[in-house]
Length: 408
Image (cartoon, rainbow, N blue to C red; front, top):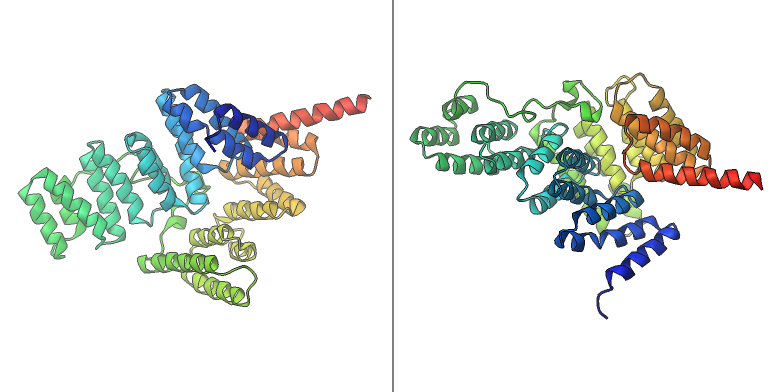
């Protein structure tokens, strides 16, 4: 059987959409995008991307495709917004590594976009040397040598003996062709010189920083308190990641419901909570990991350890509300998100997330007037938030239908 024509695929997508099978319809629409981009039909591709995203707003890869397409048509500010969304989704879903691989392939010739991505990730996650090194490689590609050195040294402060950081540093020194720089590197390897001394030799004592790279704000995750982002020590970070990976692998090897599963999860939870004790950011990361593995009960237990006085509390409550929503506990979810909205916090991202879920909850509860009310509030903050435009169209259609029904 040959490949289906685009016309047939489009008809199938519309049919799935009419049946309310939004994710399947989204995939059908998305399957046509690459062909349009290859034929330089970028405007048409954007229409399909927007359509696919409106039906399945959690399709993170489409955010990258949209950013790249917007860049092609010179809509740079919009492309940067999309890459920010892509980076935040990578963190929220716990898929930073996978999406780093994806953007390095898809945006290989778009260093400015990759730079924006790494900077956004680093505004939240500052414990992983590989993310710093990704940014350093981009800066190197852009010819920003001094800034690349700065980022490499930031990575080495996390892991003094990091092989990849030292390898990149060696390569850049070789390109520089300076004997004094080589001497500095050799003294670093044998631990005769400190990092600060080597940095001074390579780039001088002047405080040269890469904009938005070394002193990155944390406002995007709802906190201005830098202490929350103080990383676990290197050993603990590595241990926690190993634990999560081990549990994911073992869950993948076992069918659900077997007797050993409960013990396995309990053992993991106890070990992990010991590692992250006192570090609210890592507790939240752990809760997200549990959620992504389908362990809602354990995710809720982790969240319960974040007290209301903690500046991660609001983000934790948003995650809890999302879990309740996914479990179709709509009234419980509504109560959580309404409390978030009543809080005095200035965390706009959490507030927008809460408003978005309240809109979806009222749609599920068939209260379209309330859904419209909260959709208007969200629109005042961000009219293009996720798939809000399509939700507002749906609400408007439903209200119109109800009005016609009453007139009969």
